[in-house]
Amino acid sequence: MGSLRNIVFGLCWAFSVPVLSLHAQSLPSTDMMRLFATCTGRLSALMEYQWLVQDPGASDTEARRDAMAELLAAAMPVDGAARAMDLRLHAKAAEAQLLLRALDRNGAWALALARRQVASCAALLVS
Image (cartoon, rainbow, N blue to C red):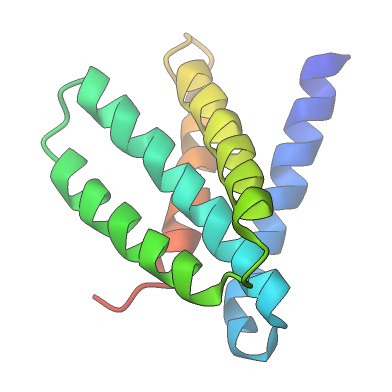
């Protein structure tokens, strides 16, 4: 039952991020902080995964993660550092769990979801 809950939560989250990114300019600063913290955590997890599997794209992911961290710092309220770190760590752990499941025999759905989530975050960055 726990894995079904994780799948449902993941799908809900995957569908909400593109909507948030489309309306990012109209979000209050706390919502912007949440979005950038979540994306920074996701990109951190992807970067570490790429290091483990020796993916040459890790340096590009690291650059995206650093750019997202700069956006997070710019959007963070003065008293928001602890909340931002909490959001970032939770997103990193969730993304890392998805990437770990992607290594399983039946993990294609996890890899697809992880890719969609990171793509939503990457769409926030100017190339």
